[in-house]
Length: 146
Image 1 (cartoon, rainbow, N blue to C red):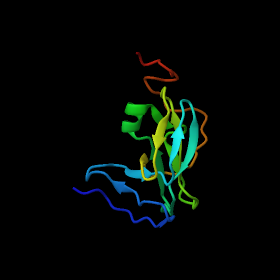
Image 2 (image 1 turned 180 degrees about the vertical axis):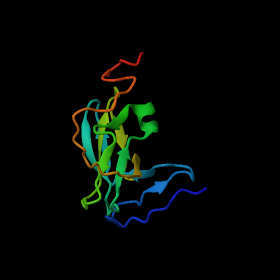
Image 3 (image 1 turned 60 degrees about the horizontal axis):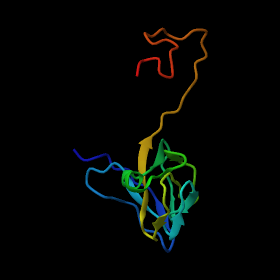
Image 4 (image 1 turned 90 degrees about the vertical axis):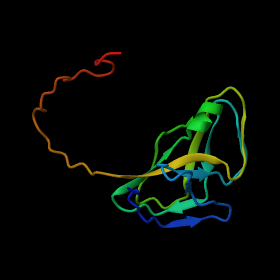
C-alpha cells in the first residue's frame, strides 16, 4: 500500500535541487547542499539547502543524518533530529559536524541529510496529585538492565 501523500509548498533558490526519495520505500527525502565546503575534524557548520517550505499545520519536518556519511566519514548532525516547525518559512539549514579524523570535502549538490514529514500531537496537560503506577515506576537511566 502506498504511503499517505501530503502536499507541501516549496520555494527553491537558484542553486537548490528539490528533495527526492532515493527509492520507492525511502522514508526520507534527500537534502543537498547548495555550496561546496570542507568540514575539518570536530568542525560544525550550518549548511544551506536553498529550500523554503510551508509544512502543514499538524506536522513537523525532521532533518536526520545520512547513514552513509556517518559510516564512511563520521559525519553527523549537531542537533539530531532537527525540527522544522509548521510556522517556519526561512531557508532550511543542516547543522553538520565531522566526528571523523580527516577533512571531508562536500561539493554543491551532494546529499547532506534527510527530511522526514511527521505528524505532531499537541499536549493538553492534566495536573494531578499522583501518576498511575507502572512496573518500572521511577527507575531510569539503566534501571531496566544492560
